[in-house]
Structures are given as C-alpha cells and as structure tokens.
Length: 253
Length: 254
Image (cartoon, rainbow over all chains, first blue to last red; front, side, top):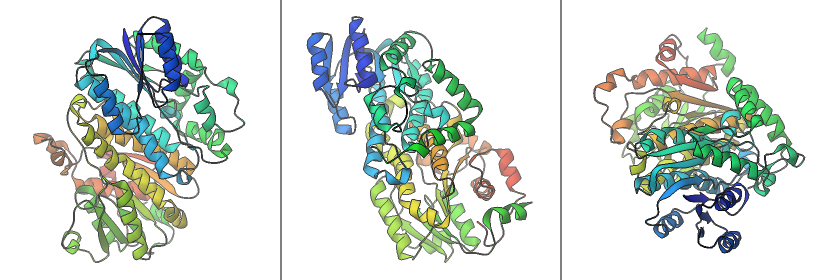
C-alpha cells in the first residue's frame, strides 16, 4: 500500500507515518520541516520518501504534485494543520491568512488534484482531519474552528462525486491531542493527562481508514463530547468559552 | 408584536444608523441597501463593479457606493475602512457581509486558482473585514451579520467549495458570537435558494427550478426580520419568509 501523509514531521502526522512504515507500507511524508523526516527515510530506506512542501503557498503545492507525478496512492491523510488562538481581533491577519491556506486551501487543492488527475488507485481513501470544534464550537480559536468546519463540509460534499472515482472519504473529528503544537495553544493550567496521545489517535485513524466508516470521533470522551455538542450546541459553546477563552492569557499564533 | 420586538431590540426609534452592506450591486445585497436607506439610515454599499453613476442603481441620496473587490481582501478592507473614515463614521451599527460568488462543477475538476479565489471572496475577505470592523462595532455595540446558505445543510457534490466556505462562516459566527458577548452581536443568516443572478454568474442554468426558488425581495425582507429579531442563527425557510411579511420595520429602526 502506498500512502501520502501531510504534516508528517511532528505530532499526529509523525505517529501516522511511523505506524504506516512499521506495518510495511510505502509512505510519502510531506512537511515544511523535512529534517526529522530524513532520519525516518534513512531508517526505512526505500519505503519512506520525505518531501518538502510549504502548504501555505499554492506554488509549493504545485511543485509537490509535479514531483509526485505518476504516483498512485491507496491512502492519503491530509493531516497538516496549524492554529491561531486568542481574541479574534488581537490575532494579526497574517496569521489568519496562514491558517486559511494551510488548514483549508491546501487540503482542498490536494484532494481535488489527486482525484482529478487520477492519482488515487481504485478503492483508495482520503482522510480529512477536522476537529471536535465542529460540534462544540471554539471561542478563542474562531478562525481555526471555521476552517475545520469548512473541511468537514467539503469532505461531506465530495464523498459522493469521489465515490464515482472509487475513492472513499473519511473525516476525523479529534478532540485535544497531546502534541507540542497543541500545548502551545492550550491555556497554561490545562493538564496534559486529559489529552489523547498522538500514537493512540493514529492507531484509531488507521483502523477506521481500513473500514467503511465515513466519520470518526476517536475515543469515548470525544464521542461523548460530540453527542453533548450535537444535543446542546449553545451550552457546549458556552462551556468551551469558560474552559478556554476566559482562561487565555494572550494570542498565540 | 413587531413594534414591541423592534423597540426592545433597538432602543428608541428614530436614530439614524450606520449600515455597511457588501455585495450590494445585485441580488439580495442591492435590495437590503435600498431597504435600509429607505428607512433613513446611512448606508455604505460595496461591490466589485465600477459604477459610473451609483445614484442610478441605488436611487437614494443616503447610499454611498465604493468599489471593493473581495478577491483582494487586503485592498478591499482598506478601501472600506478609509471610506468609513472619510464619511466621518466613528462607529458602525450594522454590517451585513453578503457578497459572495460560487463555482459549479465536480470537485475534482475545480481549477486551483478558481478555488483560491472562491476562498478569498467568500471566506478570507469576511474574516479580514470582521477583523477590521471590530473596533467600529464595539464602539456602537453594533451587529455583524454574515450571510451563509442553506446549502450547508446537505452534501453538495457540485458546490463543494462554495458550501465549505459558507459552513466555515457558520462556524466562525458561532465561536465569534460567544467571544464578542456583551461587546457586539454576531448573527449568521442562511437564505434558501433565491432567484438571483448568482447561479447564472456561476455558470449554472437553473431552468424551471427557478420557479421553486424564493424571490430576492422576500428573502431580503426575511433577512431584515431576522436581524430585527436578533436571531443568532437563522435559516430562511419559506415559512419564515411568510412570517416576515407580517412584520414591518418603522422608520429609524434597523
């Protein structure tokens, strides 16, 4: 099986890449920071291809696609994502531009080209990573939440047209993950023990990607939070405000 | 009921308000601009088109039009803010972020540059403008209204990116409303299919389906009704548009 993972150098992408390689699959690992990936490529010689791409830039995505010309993927995980947290009006617009390009522009562009140019093999899967914020809201990360809502909507919309090309779509709605990136955006006093380990999340995602599920709320706690958010959307957003927004000290982007 | 509701939500009637409406050269935006100007408010209308004489289009002295191309959010926002400053507006009572475009076709055939432009016009611009308008809205405890679409309710195979941008706005408003609590109000209004030129501009021939679409006039009046009611999230159904007919705004009321 040949897989493509974006944002593969750190956090969840790293865990996904390592697990795919460990189970003997070929992985094209894409990131802006290729140094950690090169070590992986050395370890799994031949199976891991480390590719540089800055997903903020359309030209860089185009270069990546040019470089991968002729590949056929069985699994594509559009995992790369960044965040910007703080008061909406205090975060600079450049941070929002970056956020929109990486979290929304890049996965849409990649998914559309990979399927459109017939780079997905038959019975292949595209995995979009949305967020639990899709169901509970995210005061203090309004634009991040907006991009993740947009991704969830896009994944839902393209499922049918992509199915005609024998490509199925899985959308993942993870809750808080215990990564360095997430730590940067969480309030100072939040405990790390409540967050899901990226290795566990990666296992759940890879398991779901082999099945027929269209959506995945990984873990019992995430599932319960999603149920609460769907039943009581206003209260869920209010709780998110109390738990995150009111405790934020300053913008982080 | 209407008068009571509007008095409750808008304080004393009769004050002239400042209203910003984007995408006001056509469709719902044009009707909204005319309606608010007709009630005596000062309206700043924006659009992509360069108009030789905006009085012909709007037919009202209290509408000022400026050209702001949303596909370049940075320039469009600075044009809008400098227009507001030139008019001496210190605060903003109501901003309706209505302007949007669409692209119709299968997602795998969507050109990359068109996709980027759609994201800029329908999503990035709204974020830039909300960011720029925040101090003006806080000053007046004003209202930010974004126009979404009922397309977000279902999977839209041929409008995937358009629907994604509108779902993004829905999520933005949900979180932003909570953030701005007590400082400014944020509303998201999702109109149903409307008989405007948007479909034709997007290259979609709606054919006979247009007879099932709501008239823009009715949708515009339903949007105003939702704004008066301060609904945080409103889907404009036929029933809601019907109810809106029994509510009329008096002069000086938003």
